[in-house]
Length: 319
Image (cartoon, rainbow, N blue to C red; front, top):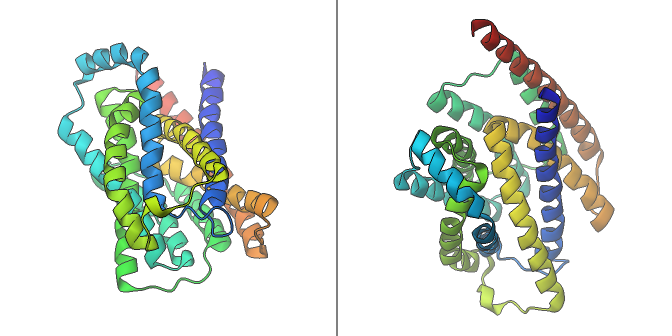
């Protein structure tokens, strides 16, 4: 049973890893100045959720009975909590895009790195979850490695810093809520995604074009489409469906903190594939920092597995 569960868990992480790295590579070509220059990031997020909604509409029949059974056992997911989740998730996407516009890329990466301690702090404050000293050391190693690999210049400004703080808190809160709502109301990751994706699509497609106009100076309808750009947009949307499904599964199975920590292995491989596919220069900082980060992630996974096994054995003894 344990080996089967471990294989299933590894499959979820692998699915999220492959889809996340692939969508970054596709979006780099779609949105990059040296690629197809589709710079409308928030609108693209709306299209991602719209496609996810469309796919869920055709695949959610089996979830209806499960959702009704879960509602009978745990209680239906309140509408106000659903709307609150969408508000937090929308704030996360909007503030991340604004942060990238207002801040130097080094400070933007540093802010994303700070999501790890932000998640740990919020889980402690709101859920009373504590982190062992060994895991703290593992997290510190991961943050050190990713910091060396990604953070170069970190110039700051008032509005950029304020938006970055909002982005860190909103993104951390959104990831915590994904796991919390699934646990509290006994709904599957697919069911939660099916309920939130239509609202996210509506919010992003209503706000996105106008926000993107502020950021880019042009409206999305001014973009000149080609068969190549349509092909990459379609690939991005298809991969986004995979990313969304695998992300909700991972956070629902593990925790927002583990998702953040182990997820940084994607950052390391994005550097590698950027160098392999797009001739992006790789420095010694990237190599050394990436190696430290992977070592920290391996240590975190090892300690986390030991702590879970110890907790399970204690529960069996008390039972």
